[in-house]
Length: 460
Image: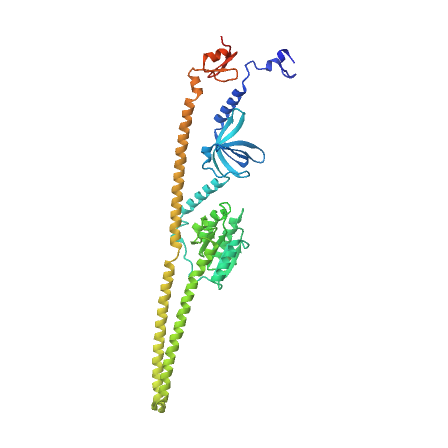
């Protein structure tokens, strides 16, 4: 130990010791805070929530960590009102201000926004892709192909072990067991699945080159899930494969609330895999019922017609005229020709009536198709989403501007500006403000705080 109890290290020389007065801990923390806030400002950070603590005040404290490090975070009640429900282990992306809590010297992030990790980026990518494809006309209703009136061979692009194909086959077996289903097995989730889906669609669309069975309709389907789970059906390669297909395509991805890019590109969108099977089987079942009814009526009318003529023939053969063979034969030949012409005319007339009834039934079925209604609702939903995005952006911009104005006003009203104008603050030795001369006289030592530092003195 050297003079006055100061500790010196052997490698330190007297010249290396700084001559200026040491900082207080409070000043050090304040300088660090100003340095961090001025240098870094606000940042986006991703990680996993841990050690979440909720206070009665409504504020929430937690650590955001990754494999190598962690940082303290706080969400004040005003900012946490619109945040999702937080829990330990949740992977999130946060936006906030870098700061230092001076009493503990703790560096932290004051969080202003929280969202599940990757959701914002995926939604932005999805909107950008859909706008691009819509501008190219890929979603236009006029380029979409109608479904065949009586499909019998169905190609399904899906996972052969998923719940979607089981639901689809169950409905089809019940409503239209005569239909043949050909499954193109693909992965419906994970890296590379979009390429498999697009390739299967292209192969079913061109059986001559691919060797796949020829089909009347292609169904692209999978069960429900999150945006990340359904992402492969939002990829551009899948949308373009659907649009390029020479065979009509039905998209039945997820549940009724799910809406993917493949739904927009497809010729028909089905809310669920089961709904796709119902669309394919409904028109045919009704048409078959009508045809069976027409066939029964045709058989009944033909039987009545034949019975009538059989009775007339029996009467003729029993009469005396029948004894003159040549005359009778001539009459019968003439009557046979007449009956042949009348029968042909009746059959042609009946067939014409049946054709008109069939065309009328087909027109009624086409008029009741949900495709036009679904297209109108999808366009309206897209417009509402666009308006919502614009309104949200405007509201965020207004709140950000109001926050900046308040922060500037607080800065102007803070003690730092007061000190800069020449005022000082007098405190006791423990840095507590003194509000009267009498209290100052009682202190052994007082500290006067200026804008650029402080001075210690003793009262008279």
